[in-house]
Length: 240
Image (cartoon, rainbow, N blue to C red):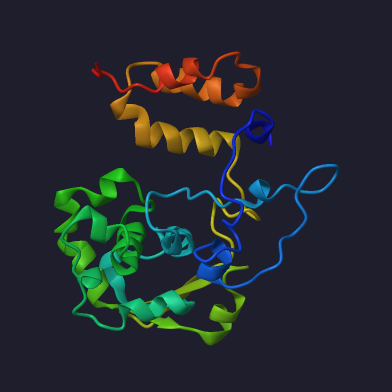
């Protein structure tokens, strides 16, 4: 609205035109815009907490809940129930079952779940080259099956359900379930968790204290007289 007031223009058929949004995704009705007491859609935004594909966020949370309740070497089988995304893993010859790069591993639910069961978290180090060849992760992946539950598919994307059941070699069954992953609009990150994520991802690339100054500036963006101050703060250390 502010840009339009300043004179910014754009195509008037971006939504209903020949190559518009409705042509790409099908016709839909716009909900009323936020404001004047109504909610803004931006407040329904999901923000991933873990550095991996969005479909992994609920499985990660379930795996972390199971971490520590059973030793990896005692796991006999791992059953993962999810929505339609589970069908991507029917072919066990797929690279998703044998990730050789970070770009494949962070989209591989079997790899991510196995790593979370072992480590109790997923972070940047989860995708280091050495971890991609970790025999403990490979062994857990061999014992894992993923399947679609039609009722979960019907719930998605309102909910992002996942149930992980671990069966020990002694026959004991332990399970964990998640519907709204950490960072979902119905399970939002706290300010501290957002700051933690930024620090984890950017800390090594920024000079000492730079991340803290960026965080402070973003939280006070509405009081900043010139956005150029924030842009300057975001320059990587060593940049010309």
